[in-house]
Length: 240
Image (cartoon, rainbow, N blue to C red; front, side, top):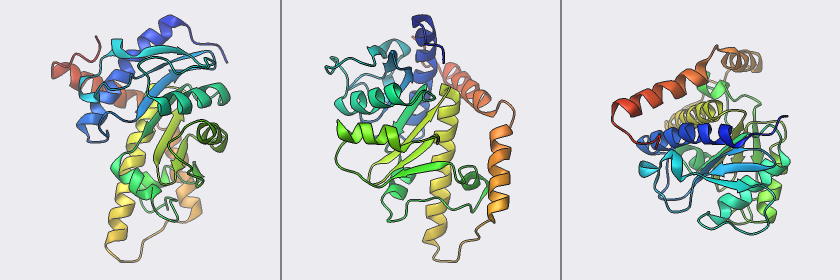
């Protein structure tokens, strides 16, 4: 896989800033915590420590060397550990987004944090989610390296007692997966709260629906374009 050059990283900052602004609007942020990155085994861009997502700008993202040994100034330690480990060890993880969003985190707190196929959003992730049940602290050192190996060939990682992590080859794909995973988790937990029996789809229908999601033309990119257009129309300075 070709390494990412500095020009490409500069361009992708705008998309990452737009995503964080939008996630904050949706209430999917958590104070100044959580992080997103884009890069490869050589370098990546990461949102800085202490900048609220409601105010994040493209120019705020820092370019980091993936193999650096010391914590860079202005970077969250857990972000540095988790994203650095994944960029070094998972070639298909160009983009990484890690959130403690409400529904996904609530799902991660269950003894069984799997997501059954009960509607077309939950079916999107059928057999496509890795689960890490070995929480051992706040994503530092050994924790980060284990997370990187647990992903396997999956794009979604349920981090038990922690939250959700999504990887992908583009900002648009990562954001779209993250958004719909949160929607799916919310639907599942709300259905559970009824106390009534769930209507689980067959494996065949769930797999068919997941593949239809994967083959839907241009969906993720159009989703990102739409939120950037909405932010621009509202006068947001995310692209600066």
